[in-house]
Length: 393
Image 1 (spheres, one colour):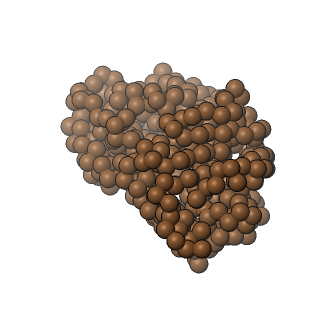
Image 2: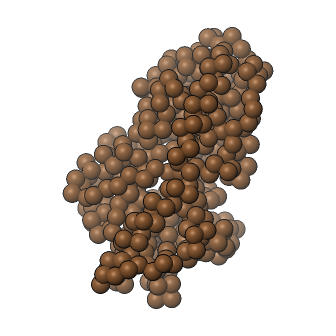
Image 3: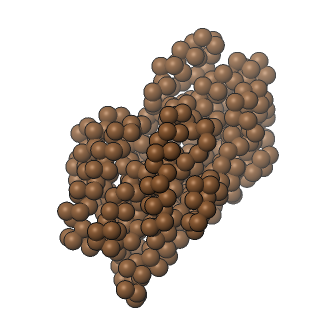
């Protein structure tokens, strides 16, 4: 039945990850939920339970329900853990849909969250919107490699979830193009991820710090390329004339391997592994740095790059989808054509380490480039979609 959507929307969000679990997708969920509540909407989130996190809490006005999901790690979810979330999420949603009466469901990642919304649509007629964030979109040569079998198995379900959705949103143009290879019939919109400009601010940085601090942030998994970054350090050390250190923030299954690699290459004295830093304190790591780098082989739209740019850091990063839409090569940072080219990574890092004026100039351009990504603007774009989708309920 068509008609005007209610002024105050009841929004159910579904994401298997939410801070402190996971990476960028959970941060997107946090910020959108907060912005929706600020605009007077009613927001409920179902997500994975973990360790001693409360089963229910109010986070910035969002009602957060953490469901049993067999989750064992803060950083990475295994396939069986995601499947357990689908099961517990489906049961919870069916039991509570009559009480919640959601106008729209926002799914973060078509897989694993999509099946829950698909079921609600079929059973209760609740429309949903799908956010595509990265690994939920089938791709050639995935990381980890065994995902190619999962993609082959799940492709029909992925298509069905997208086609049944009221709207499908990709966080970057590159991800949209990749998704269209799976189903060219789906109308996919692009809304980038955002940045909290009130939290991430650019400090006044010296032109000649000692040492120059290089920062990289992410989950310690192969796709993020920390092994390539560490492999580049001996060359950076030979090329750069000024002292520098590298701080790696994040945790994950590669921590032990990366520590051993740094030892074997003789660079452990200039590499600091800081582990997981709470999101509310992450801005401190950016503010104390002078250069940011990310050597990923694939991304959706990495929030860490936006956050680095918002704090005025020059960026050295891989030229992959999502990143190349944020960083203008030679203007707001440097892009590496081949993520595995450690010599190219080393060359650009050494150039920025030695040239303080270049660092500051590129950092200023980066700061200007992120102004349009404020979460307030991003949330409004989603709400416009919700109102259209809900009106067709």
